[in-house]
Image (cartoon, rainbow, N blue to C red; front, side, top):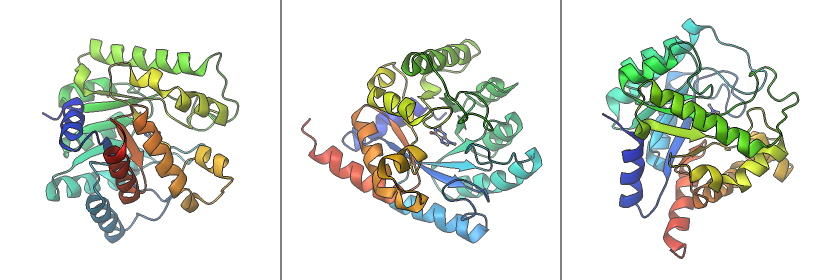
Length: 280
Ligand code: 9MG
């Protein structure tokens, strides 16, 4: 059965320290960066083929945008959006598929249809979510966020963001393990932009080593996010590629094992060069 830790280890050994690249496939009409681009089946197919050609390792399929204030999608609609896509990818290609959802029913159907990883921005806190992961024996990504999707960016506040994010992630990992999720199937994720100001994101990123030394793989997702825009003073999401690639490379140098990105080929190329030319 697929274990994310072995998957990462094999890739690192095979490809000179290269991290795992997770490509984002939003099948939503309203995602913050590529909303509406991948809603027809030919657009989805083209995007999957382009990510595979670019060197993607995991395709993360999501049917509901998690950007602040995004409209909630009814369960039936989310299922209709993501399940055929997951089934299509897993039947045709030998690639790992993750499902980006916080809804237990979507997780259950996704793993039945071949998803090997549950990427949950709610860290498996929905009723029954941990049981789905345990019963299907799949890997999970536990992400930190403060507050609800609707209000999380209103006034995020922490005494010490690094300490609180670290504590939350370790608590969730231990809680999942106590219920039967194997340790080698858990990924931690600080959740950049989820209930965090620019300053909070900056502290987390600058101190990423605190999280990457916890003995769990760490996923970093900053691709095209507002924190990149704020540094670049760039409002268009499509002009954030170079900044996003730089952040993915730096995250990897700070020990991140997985980077979640929109621009797969550009990120893979930058990582290949970095890994080949770095001193050790
Ligand atoms: C779905 N999604 C959006 N941003 C994300 C991030 O930073 N990490 C993970 N795991 N998922 C995300």
